[in-house]
Amino acid sequence: MEQEIYYDPLIENNVDHATIDTIAASDQWSTWRDNLATEMFNEWMSNAVQSILVPNNGLDFSPVQSSPT
Image (cartoon, rainbow, N blue to C red; front, side, top):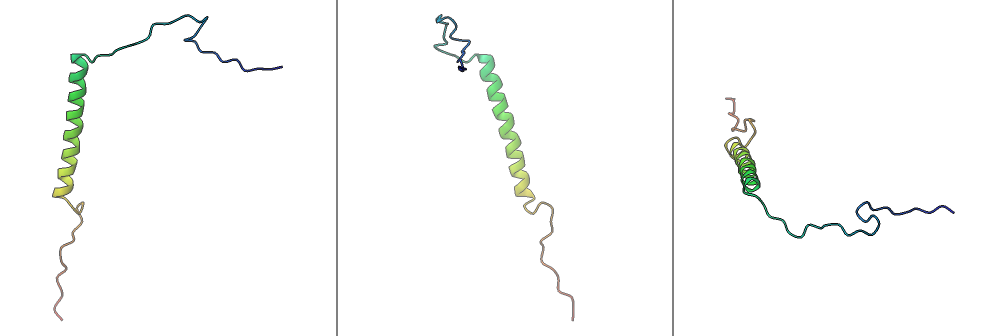
């Protein structure tokens, strides 16, 4: 009779393994995260400003002058 055996490498021979109870961000990590967030925001803001300054993406929707009849 075939059976699937569940194998979890973290629970080998019923040995308790150390667990991570707490974590804390380092100053280096916080600085990197803040710089990344600032860079992403500045890029997004630049694109937002571009879409405001060029609302028609370069297309000309100015009124057409009627030709004299």
